[in-house]
Image 1 (cartoon, rainbow, N blue to C red):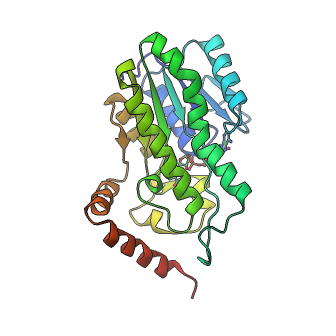
Image 2 (image 1 turned 180 degrees about the vertical axis):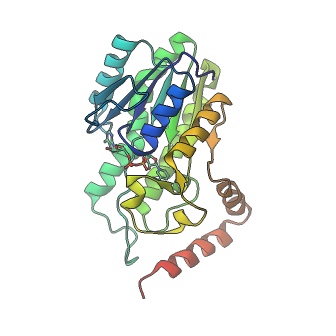
Image 3 (image 1 turned 120 degrees about the vertical axis):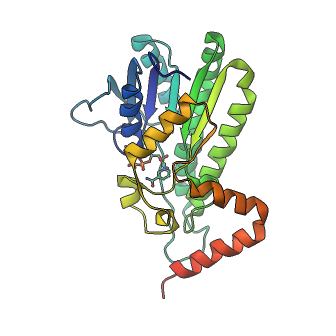
Length: 258
Ligand SMILES: NC(=O)c1ccc[n+]([C@@H]2O[C@H](COP(=O)([O-])OP(=O)(O)OC[C@H]3O[C@@H](n4cnc5c(N)ncnc54)[C@H](O)[C@@H]3O)[C@@H](O)[C@H]2O)c1
């Protein structure tokens, strides 16, 4: 998609990858970039045209957000569902399913259902307008796995499933989809989780990841892998799933206390 002159909405845009993405879209020529987040920065960040409070786990709040943005700024061409949470990190490896059901529910709501809520509202509108773009920030954990968090791995895998359905289901409507699947990115989220294999191939800046995302939108690539090694790991996984499980278990063994 040619980003020039387009209107974009970025969730989780107050910091980290979302903010860098908003700014990269503006630099790439977007006419209007709106960010949405639970809490907004005191000052409007450089390159951002509007900022709105929204809890993306709530379908009614996303619907109201999209209505407001379209009423004020015009039709959303690029919907970036980027907000996400990394919770349920188990550092003891005693019980990989240990997280409280409320933790699972919240991760499901933010990492998966928020994408569904936005798409539910925008698909009919984009179809009527002849097309549109969804960028879903997922993670390499959605393609491979996050050693130490079944919550994060499972919800990010589900997000991959939804992105695939969206891309397949609406290709003929002119709707394009990309999923952004980095490993470690230097953001407040990464600082808040235990060290692990996500650091193994280097930590990228949010700006580098945002640039990769913009390039992926321009070239309409479904899977955007800012860490190229992820493609090799995916190939290894498909080639021999059992060997891959064994390798991941070995990584976990190395991370176990003691
Ligand atoms: N940082 C990494 O290493 C990394 C790697 C792979 C994927 N990701 C993914 O990238 C995305 C952005 O992560 P980040 O590293 O910038 O994280 P971050 O925590 O720095 O920023 C996430 C933003 O999302 C917002 N947010 C969280 N829940 C929300 C909700 N319910 N409604 C609205 N906003 C909400 C937060 O307030 C925050 O501003 C996430 O989906 C994350 O899973 C991050």
